Length: 353
Image (cartoon, helix red, strand yellow):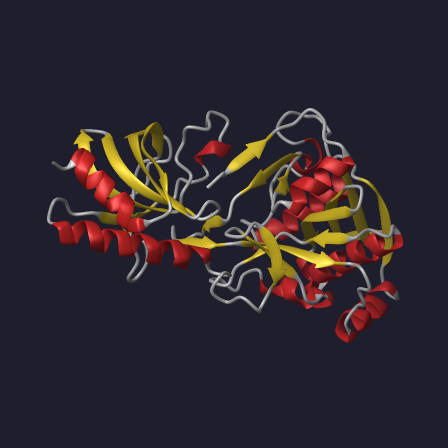
């Protein structure tokens, strides 16, 4: 699934644009990609990177009204992002009291990342009511693109829609610089948490299957890649189980982000779902995965890691069981094959006779 994070020493504006074009996004001063997210319930959902084309972009009537109203009441500043100070700390703490999972305690992470260095051209906007800071946001500038990565506001001013207001200000800033694209993070067709971003206008989403940008709302099937993977693996499981040689079980895998950890490495498995084919030792297994960006299947030999142990059980009312341990890939047992019938027969002939 190419779930990766890159902590770079340098990233040119042009190269930053290219990462965004390929569906990557930013965290701190790093760039990463992932098309799935584990939510608070432990379930997995698909997430879709979004892109707003700024060529001929016009604010909607409601956003123009919001901008006029708020700009008449608040003072706005822009500039390179500054380290956390007393006023941003105060607003962030107030925000975290009502939204504890939506902002970090240490705001410097957005500016200098894990390694206390600036790699991205991170800017900020600050919004003041008189001399009091009431909201701020961070965004990363490329050559022709901007990524909006965090917006924080004081809950006493929630009625002013300051979250969407900061995004509108970032877009306005982009238009002044004649930027081509604004990337507001991601949404999910399986969760309403991020739906407010649709207020920005008609956007494209990054399709993991074609690895291209498509109009959001016009491809409802492709907008749920997790469901596609589920159906493809279920089909293979039916073929395998029909053989009578083994019983393949479908598992949800909530550790697909293990590579992001400080001790993670590229051998960690990074798929949202897999078929457990057989257990070959106490902590070792054969599994089958589907790779949407390549439209093929592969069989892997994996072993358990002690990282991220979770309680097993159902991943939702009717969902697959969650696999409790993170898995490390030891070996590719069968080369990727696009035909499900061929991967089934190849595995049965190689490992079940």
